[in-house]
Image 1 (cartoon, rainbow, N blue to C red):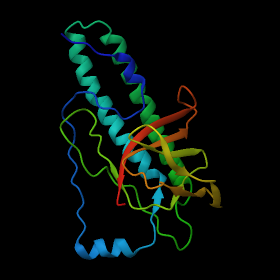
Image 2: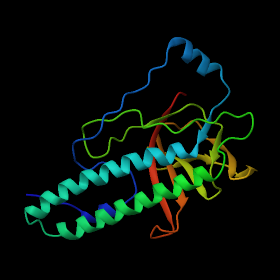
Image 3: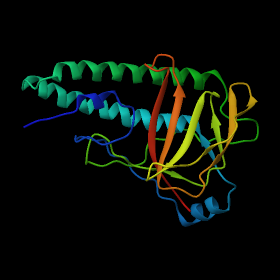
Length: 217
């Protein structure tokens, strides 16, 4: 007997729903020399595009996986499958538009001020076969600042109990199309980054999602 809460399709949050065919990612391993160098470096800059890239990779993979399941449900005559499939496709289209929106922002201006080397976005470094969503945390290396492509973003740290235990301070414009804010985890590392980004095409004018994190405290 198949049951499904199709209302969950409208959620932007990272919560696993059973599905297979998750793409595998290889975890980058640091050499002993690289690890020591990482430890002696000043605190890193957290690049906003990395957050969005991790979200979009996970979300689009999930939506594609959901479409496969919903097509099977539709063939089997499951009630509500047709409506849920249409909602899933609308959400997929919205996320593709969001990706294009971010690409335009990134290409419109520099992500780094002179003398500061900003990290480039990288794929989420791992995956699993447990479901549509891998729920794989990104590693936080004692980030002290976040580099943002616009000032219209809010990032907070939420622990496993759902309590806010860190986030970003006042956002300062430091160059054209470049913003920076202090970032404090308050030593709570195992939980989520709650990210909210203004996006006019979204139903509520913004997209909000969670990314699982861990760090090296």
